[in-house]
Image (tube, rainbow over all chains, first blue to last red; front, side, top):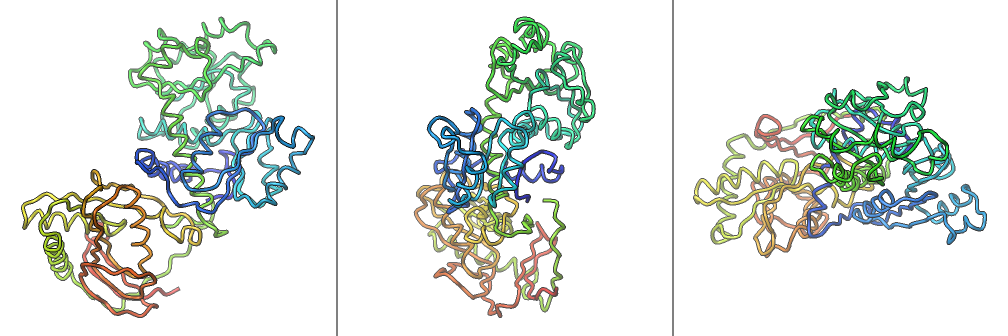
Amino acid sequence: MMKHLLSMDQLSSADIVTILDTAESLRSVTDRPIKKLPTLRGRTVCNLFYEASTRTRISFELAAKRLSADVINFSADSKSSVAKGESFKDTAWTLEAMGVDAIIVRHGSSGAPHQLSQWVKASVLNAGDGQHEHPTQALLDLYSMREHFKDLEGLKVAIVGDVLHSRVARSNVKGLVTMGADVILIGPPTLIPPQAATWGARIGYDLDEVLEEIDVCYLLRVQKERQSEQLFPSLREYAALWGLDSRRLARMKPEVLVMHPGPMNRGVEIGADVSESPRSIILDQVANGLAVRMSLLYLMLGGRSEDGEVFE
Amino acid sequence: MGNAPAQKREFVVKSRLLEPDDVRRALVRISHEIVERNKGTDDLVIVGIRTRGAPLADRIAASIADFEGADVPSGALDVTLYRDDVALRGPRNLEATTVPADLDGRNVVLVDDVLYTGRTIRAAFDAVLDLGRPRAIRLAVLVDRGHRELPIRADHVGKNLPTAASEIVKVHLQEIDGEDAVLIGEYRP
């Protein structure tokens, strides 16, 4: 297994299958009265978050604790030395000096986890960097799709919304294309980056055109803070053209899955009734995230050997 | 990931110690011993340690059903996450743990193919105790090859096999390897 997880580019389809299969074995631990395994006893994991997060940080923290690792949570806010002007590099070296085995990092700048991995001996896991990637989100999404469709090959997945600013979209496209899925990117032309044509996904601008053919409708969060950039006219117009409401849901295949990485803007990219419909697996995504992150921590920190082969 | 696969060493068989009939007889005898020791089949649960303990547990349960006419639940336990050598040997692929029902107050018979250092059994104790609180845990193995590193012994043994530490004992089972046999040999690089 690799030392760092920085990008979905690192993972072959066989690697992804190993991670998802391991997650499946670990999922059952959640249903037991004693939800803890001794596997990573004595290991220390640090959550280093320079950006806000609810589910990713909690999910990583819980995953590490379920495997008996010690967890340090670091948020770059007014309570940390970042407020005193400590640089990213000095913070990294401080953590290194304390002897952490893994650093889970979220940062507003694309490439920050890669930079961090050059500075420290610990394993680095990218928990979202700028507009670059969010690989653990993509892996938990692949896991969630695989729970319903045994084979990801040929699966038709529409990723709808602000692809331009979305690290979730980038990681998901890479993972889905690696697994042989058929990906369609849909959104306002201003929010589809021109280079998306090289990602191996189809590009469309009209959600209504693809409703009947897709197996998965993956909605991206409308980043309301970007509305000032005037990339789309108004939230109401966005909802009318690219929002998934119950009328659009009714036109889709009966077995379609509705997914969202959270946090949701109900009434904008997703109708309140759609988010709570039986086709929505948004809460399963959260639960599966725990198993997938346990799987990654086990596979990446479980061994000391440098060649790191997964045994038989 | 992305590394070349570890070189497969060749296993050279020195002798075959148990043939299919020997394996069958040993398992039938162990099944009888388990029921005798338990004074019947009440509260009995047979749990095989993956990989090769799992089919053995199923066979023992089937054998008990055969001569006692009672259904004894059987299951499989993956102890990988409880091993004390995870950090030394690196992660291995996991398999499902499928232990029937509730273990509280039951008599759990752990089943494994080879008893050697005792460390796998130690890991299995922890794994079972995280699933419930059995009244008793007993141990049945097809082969006991000695060289214990922990104070653990089996309650039911198919065959005691004095070995040298350099030798490798391999159990082959129909369900996994296509034949029943116990082999002794060594790895050649």
